[in-house]
Length: 278
Image 1 (cartoon, helix red, strand yellow):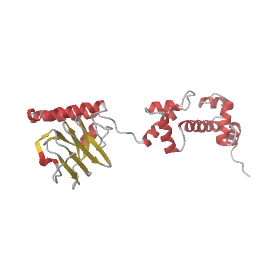
Image 2: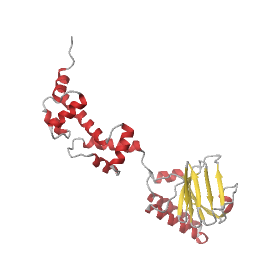
Image 3: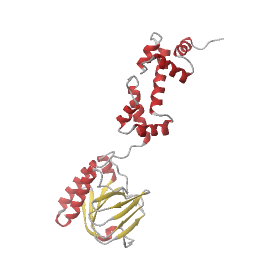
Image 4: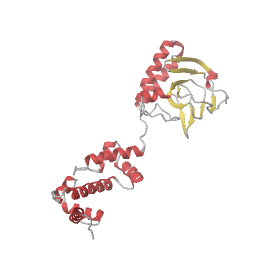
């Protein structure tokens, strides 16, 4: 792609600029350009770069995306970025980042990621931006304000931000605690409740906690059973085992001995008798 380098930001090649509602619409000229931006002061803006014709490349935060016709990408104004465009038609929409985050918490705002091809909601946003770009000459300022409002609302249809592994593990642990007493509980049930595969969640659990889903469920059941062995002396061992998901008492005893190096009965006696005093 043959590019012309310009020192000034794309504003120098503006065909039209309209302040509209909380944002600003900028129709960029068709000439190719390349910009490397090092922000000197914080503006708190989220820029949406949309391409209707031609193609471009945007880079920010260690990511790099190719922008094809009908796609768009986010760019944050307060971090360095690079933007290059071949000859074609493109639109720049500036919005306060705080407004977008407040209106649509959880939306994926990772910058320099090509959008508008795979995700249905992002295709809708891309279509809106493309139509605004094409109707430049016929949109009044009032129309532009309405259009910005529509796009701002439509951003809520975009993909959700990837959940951090730690947050996913915390949700899985909470789900496990709620369902520990269900004998039918399986690791796959926990993964399904999180909307991920068991293999993925097992990997995240192993990374964060050093154990698989199944191992964690088994350990927590044994710990809860051990707690009740020492605090509910009138309940039979088999009753406590069943309450915490162990249908087979002999199987429970083997697992208990493996984990605590003693039998349930011996554990109970030691807990109820307390330490000896010489």
